[in-house]
Image: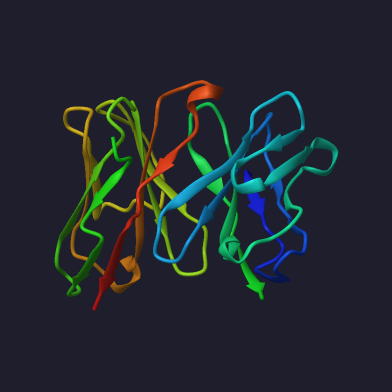
Length: 112
Length: 116
């Protein structure tokens, strides 16, 4: 069955520190992979996506993610976190049909 | 174009009442999706349309739920005889169409439903 696992429900980092949010997926074919961010009471904004090619993808707001097929992972990273990055982050897997399967989400808190 | 628009943003209804939500996708987008998100969870797929055709429905979409996209533009999601378990955020998204380059989904801000 297709699924996405985000092992960390809540992460707290200090402002300026580096960040890594974990995502593991289970998918039969070559997946399309996405990271979305959601602020409280708001919809989802796409941070970055991976379809094929270079396994390190760059996104908006200084985020990047690396696709590792051998580990079925697509972890999100940022070298220096800003207070405005505090939000909920969702990893998702999809295909050409467009339907997305989301993980449970990781809530990020940023300490001043 | 201001993106995907959903109306209303919030809805409080009594159990047993019917509710209808509207979604206006980005104008040139052929695909429209509905998702449901409960507190502390990721969005769950409900259904999607390619133009006016409803191509897939999740088993989460019970017979109390119906969605339409009559002219391939806006869409409505109706819930009949609402139950407290229907309380959730209902998210609409649209995408240009098939193919890797067109798969990116743009989400609206959602409709928060509270059933009391």
